[in-house]
Image (cartoon, rainbow, N blue to C red):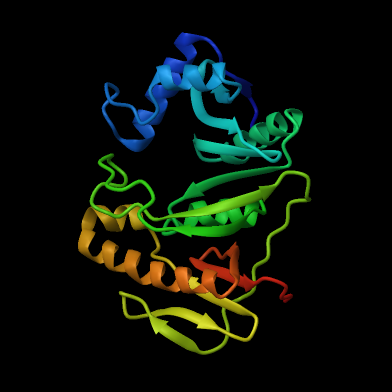
Length: 249
């Protein structure tokens, strides 16, 4: 835990409104049109879900929302935090879910955002288990506007020790990325797929190029998942490791 930071569940109306404002700032929407309105957050808490807030003193520095699902599973609807606090926020969600009797947690994220992929797959040890094409349809917030909303579902075993499974890209190049460099490498057991260095900046600077990346990565990952691969790692330089189910390094 970062010194001076506390994480707790949020229940009261004023604190839930502050969380809604925080999510508006993160996703660059007007506070009058938050991605998760305070009344929705209040309803989720009332229905047995949990909203966590990370507080640096009195200042809100991160938040997350989770609900209980069927079959001992939990769904993390959203999580965001300032740099260095993300892991603590997810661990707080994990502790809450385990206390509620859940064994796994699932959530989705944009597969082109490499830093989020690395956090989810390498730091937490979750596994990418499903590729969803244009999951939300058109999005108009300040982060996603102008792109299609593909998402990668990750599943986190809450009872397993944290482990990542990264293997350095090797094998022949089988596809070229929109920037002219390798997009895909593969061998008998693994496939590697590269994503842009910073898709959010790219989307703002050159939305057409960002969309070409979307289609290129979509084609690779959709095919890989059909072939029985799962996303098991992400390198610091933007390469997914995908491992065929049942394979070892």
